[in-house]
Length: 136
Figure 1: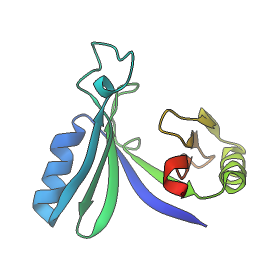
Figure 2 (figure 1 turned 180 degrees about the horizontal axis):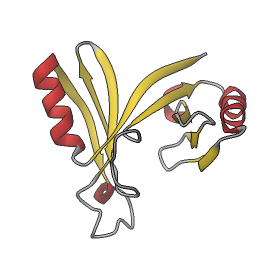
Figure 3 (figure 1 turned 45 degrees about the vertical axis):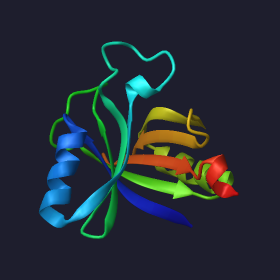
Figure 4 (figure 1 turned 60 degrees about the horizontal axis):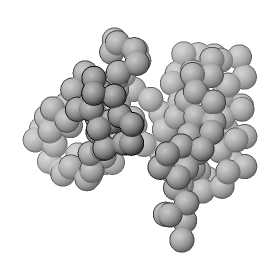
């Protein structure tokens, strides 16, 4: 079983999230910028790597798109977070069949597995596991 979250890519994630919060009611939960990470490049230090917010009672996540330009069709990612690593690996492998692996499912700096895949129908998926510190 997974937790579903819409993950949006943006040219300005903070401004876009603030717009949705104002339009729909809600709150900002957290913002992490590239500059918060060790060895961050000066060029990316102010770019959002992950942002979490609530709007209209729904949880959303976002980041600034720094590796490819934002265009219609690549701004929404379907994120599935699994409690079990085996479930995450199975979902990732199944979605990757006939698709394109954008980032292999591997340990991420925040203590979870993360992988990014575009399925054979062009849908972008982020597959993650619950971070180790959140499993206690």
